[in-house]
Amino acid sequence: MIGMKHVVGLIRVLTTRDEELLNLHGKIIESAFPELRVVSRCIEDQPKGVYDRESEELAKPKVLRLAKEFEREGVNAVIVSCAADPAVREARKELRVPVIGAGSAVASLTLAYGDKVGVLNLTEDTPEVIKRVLGPHLVAEGKPEGVRNTLDLMTDWGREAAKKALKDLLKHGVDVIALACTGYSTIGFARTAEGMAGVPVVDPVVAAGAVTLNILRQRTVGGATK
Image (cartoon, rainbow, N blue to C red):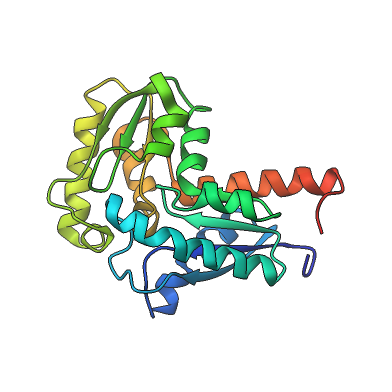
């Protein structure tokens, strides 16, 4: 560890040259969990990110390549900042350091808050990894109308569409909301949503940070950390 902090490599699936946007998810995690120092990189040639099955498949080899690169550089863990967890399962098989996906993290933490989970997606159905973790606790799912990718979510009309989709989800009697796209973290939607919903709203980037820190603390106690 550098300076007594755990160093985490964070992979963004949205290709960007905007340094502030690139580092935003890492800054969110560092703010919530000061024990972590996050280094962020993005995959190439996906300016609209991951927004459907096809874009997810395109991202997988790129994510795996970056994860291996991070491990070679000596990070303590890798976070894939995407709720679909692209290549997370593959990376776990090939890397020795922990690999945390935002999707499985948000789903797991959501179950600590309630039994009836509503999932707010980006475009398509709930990501498979989130469905798998939630099982019968997934009682409702929604998505903002007209939003096609994370860039749309960053517009004023995209935010309004997300608010409307959230209101529709609440009609199903859910007791906790999982945000199933890290684009919601980019626009700081969890705080807005919790104020509207009156129930806990779990942010996928914060969830990934929480799970990562917990794993690294346990490895340190067990003497497994490099």
